[in-house]
Length: 141
Image (cartoon, rainbow, N blue to C red; front, side, top):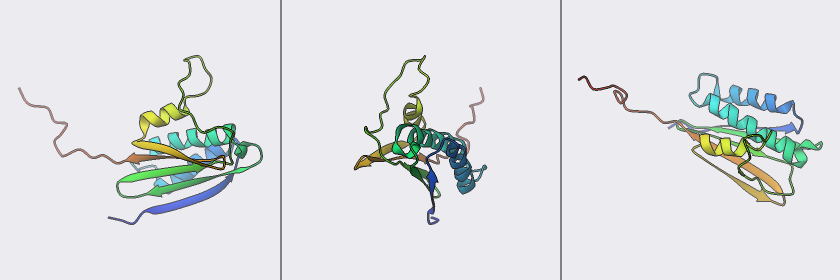
């Protein structure tokens, strides 16, 4: 088992940093990594939430952390603090926002958050699942 690779950045809480966070995750994983696309999508959702719903977006910062092992990717976003904890609430189909954490819930292996003095750290894990050779082969009739 390889030791985990770990990267962390403190970024300004500005909307343009969502794209930067996606690029940083791409750099940490590489485009060929089998969990790349889901990692980038979910990072985008968490960073957007930090910028829109916390003090990070009011001139503050947020911290993006990426941990990669042989079997999983764990990404954390620590924001600048908010009045309320993250909520994976369901929204109407016509709502213009509110889908980030439900998407996180649907795609990640597991996720969660910690909240200390109003500061939220939201994280997710994606697990690399391999199937045995021949698993997808069909029986000959």
